[in-house]
Length: 303
Image (cartoon, rainbow, N blue to C red; front, side):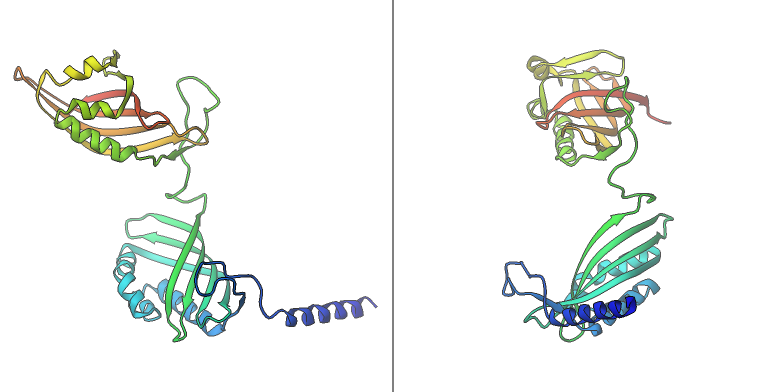
């Protein structure tokens, strides 16, 4: 009796599946908006699999043959550079679904995969990928989109990393750090240009009122409007050259950030003396995007 019930259930499920000719809806604002999705052809899936096989073998020219001329012209140079910089690529799909918008002659191949990568420089990476390959009626890939998620064991590319400790224990102690992207790098590049031009008004515009600089000797300098007016008086010229600018913030906190700047600064004094140091500075940006505090460290330039 149990076996008979299972057979009936499977049969009913098959009949029900046969009744479903389309499902879902295309919601993009174009000619196909509102149309349902239907299954596409396996031939389109085989085209994508063949392109992946060429990709994994490092044969970029063969890989490009599966793409339209427009896609070759658009992405060919990038693909060649990508393969030149990588020593091993292994994309392993674990499911593929060819679908079409009803009324469209293109097939969209939805692909989920895991990809291992090794670079010529020795770096490695592993990602989960969700990709859409659009295959036209001539059997060529005419468009491509990709979404990725890094494995937590990646050597690089993770959204969070490091650890914040703080001078004293707080609610933030132990949290990871993330890159900040609120224009800090661009603002500091503009600040450096204005500083080298000894343009005190422009420099001041990047700082909050009464911003504090903790100098290398431990002194605390409050930058008032009066101080800004005379800040460049001792110098005949200045050359501040950044080596790196790294904007960071503590994970899950307000938008305020801290930016680490490694640089070399040469100050030529009007009295003929020269101050020449390599610097590590921390610039603290508040939620309004103004610098409120700078902490400086210095070392003699290596001989």
